[in-house]
Length: 161
Image (cartoon, rainbow, N blue to C red; front, side):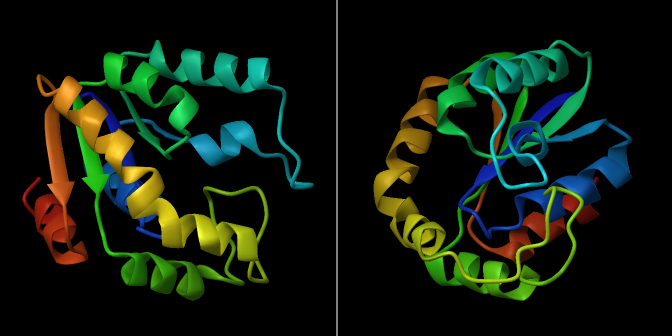
């Protein structure tokens, strides 16, 4: 377990899980949101994002948290371990609600208000995005893949490291 990608619906706790994993293992942690977004809530050029990601992936060890379906397969090819936080929509919506207004090390700004478009994305994640994730996980079944359905399972995994 040297190259780990942590994926899941927004609000599932990818960054929290990744920070805990980083603390336990010492493996460098990279947040895709920090590679993609600027503090003024604009995005970097696609080539800049890709360059930042490639620089991280080329390292010997890494934990990369985030979805970004355009780079999902690239990360799957490079990783040895996948952690998929496959939680219900309600768990994810609750996670988003709890983090609102709190500074986060994985985002370049503090989210203070509800973004309706983002909430709709979360509500539709299991229908619109999860099938592709599952398809890719099946395609890359030679990787160590951990799919957690509840936070308790993810925490037990971390506790056993």
